[in-house]
Length: 153
Image 1 (cartoon, rainbow, N blue to C red):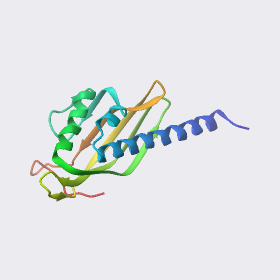
Image 2 (cartoon, rainbow, N blue to C red):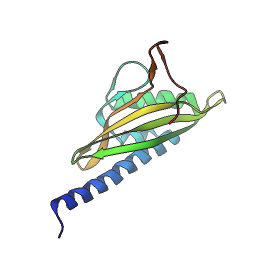
Image 3 (cartoon, one colour):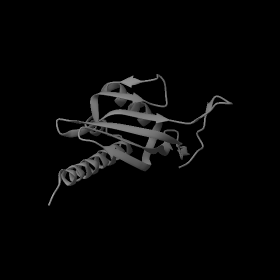
Image 4 (cartoon, rainbow, N blue to C red):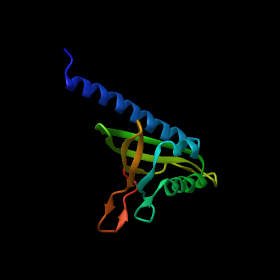
């Protein structure tokens, strides 16, 4: 006998798989610097708390502009996410883990980048899971007032 909990679990498992595919698409789009693909992953009213000022970036254009800034810094770009944990509901989901941008800068210098803490919030909009909020942050050393950019997961 199938119970409501079984149906809910199956639906959530399916939604989690779709969200993971969305994040894989995000990573793939970043690696090839594909703004059009990124446009399909973020909600139009996305709010981003990124590592660079200001405190928040609001809207799809602002989020894509953040990525354009990154793209202009890198000749070749890699992005990876580790230790991603997702919590999926019927119409909202969130995930957290660690992310790192690395690659070759436009001046030819190779960089391993730095690990940041990442949070992704999704909303199911017209049947599609879109990122409505994301955040990237580094831990702060209160004594020095500086970000701790050398930590690894």
